[in-house]
Amino acid sequence: MGAGTRMDHEVTVVRLTAAITQAGDWFVARCLEVEVASQGRTADEAEANLKEALELYFEDQPTTEVHRPVIRTLEIAR
Image 1: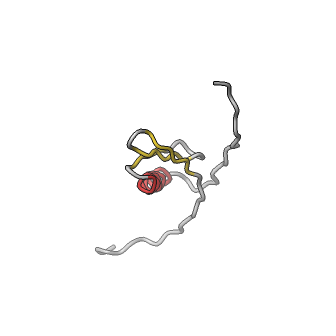
Image 2: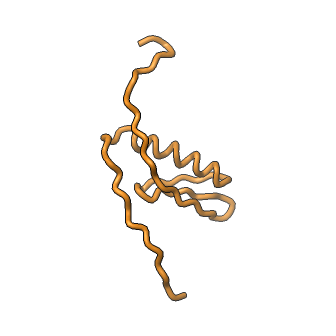
């Protein structure tokens, strides 16, 4: 394989959910389906960093279906 060439491989697109919150001066982006998180100075930067982290996370994972968590709203007394 010469310089600038790339092996062709099948690309699987996975739709994931990000929760982005602000913590002080930083934004934290968490994936709700897998235990991956990242941060950035802006919400957009945190999201972009999370996408990169997720691509690295799934790079060596076998291609399988991502199991969706059950998302519920809870009420607590405070």
